[in-house]
Length: 316
Length: 299
Image 1: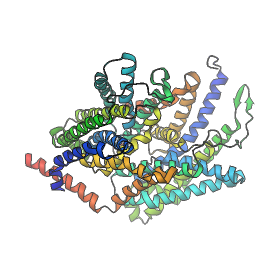
Image 2: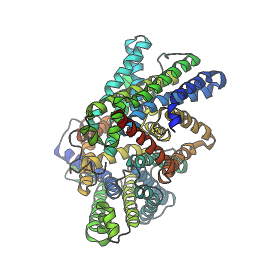
Image 3: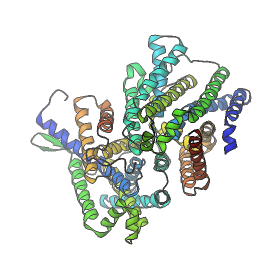
Image 4: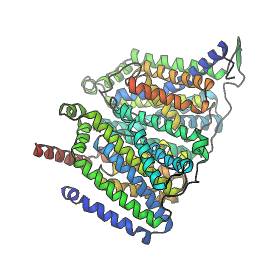
């Protein structure tokens, strides 16, 4: 594990290289599934910081992606600015809206916070559903130009983004603010006593998370060319959360589990309608077995935790 | 209808909201019971409610059993489901002191599983059956009330009184509360924690099922229905104060009435926005809910 962590930076580049070759190997459909996986892995990377580092669950990922995607659409449709400017603006809008979620997090934790994020997500989804003149309502909308029409070019852009963001997450994890996030997860009172500005750290982690969700949302819009409230239900926020758990809170794990879990329902497609049932059952069994026959997962967590402690004591 | 505000209309709204609210209150009560007993938060409560509704649809409509028998069968089946959940998932997670976050994520996966289980068994087409309580509204001095509304309030009132008696007045109920308060101490006092926790889950699932059974004739059943109702149930539990018996009831009724009044005076399309907005306001300004509880204790 120690070694793996040391080389994780190279591992990220290796994954990036493999992803770059994908358009020449995979079929058109395979590439689409892969790109959906890559797009999901961006929001999962954000969740690695929020859930993995700071220990706050969020079921608002899909809603924030919707904010990103729909802002992109609205900016292009009604203001008709350049797509690249629209991308930046829609990410900014997502960050502003997502950071609002930090306010309940100051006083809430655990299930309370999670239900609050669902409430927030449902409000956004219902607003999109009902503000039909602007968003197209339940019919969805597809009349907007894609950011990059060529899928191989899009693949290059997404790969660069993912490699960049994964390295960023890894470096944030080791930085001062990242250690503050981890301190909050372990004991937020102790963290505050040690001089961590808990409110600031929580605001920052929510801003970062919504930044990632916004990027993911814009890519979603570009990739599918179709936006509808049905794509952003709370159920859609669940899978990123499961990916973080399976990815064991590391950026590399997050990317791999996002790609793997996006691909899994495609593999299970022969099961027809029971596909999602089997998929969720596998996840449930995984969670149950990995927690109660704990050996490797708990050992792994302990290893990461003791390592942080060691690092802290060394720096003192 | 929107412009004519008479006192009768208002009372009618309150009564209808109250009846819907009691249906939110039951599963919310189940959430509170589980929270007290194991510190786990069950995200699948809304889907257990849906499953209860589908059981009733199967027993009452498809198998054509008499109403009371179908009701009992559906509740018993769901009780068994609750016992299985406790045995296979929640109790091992509890006894090994697994991080509540992980348990929470597991219940989220469980919610997806139950939704798709209903989809596989009963199909995606929404189903409904004729309201067994009658469809002819009663008129009392200008107030129109559907008979099911009165039945709901009566059934829930009886159930809640019985539950309260069970928890406060019987030895098993006292043992259940003891486990909830301090599981180590109750173990030392000779209480079998695993059985008590199983029983808590049986009760929680059964009362969620009652709610699903009652709600099934008035709204169409669909596999995904548990999603929205589930969030409203969670909102009720949190607004009332999670872990509090009275809180769950008052939270549920508050959500039901708020929803009914808002739909009548403003746009029904935004009623969920209003309820969840209420939840957000509560969580920001009074995180413990109406009956303030110590949320840092178990969260």
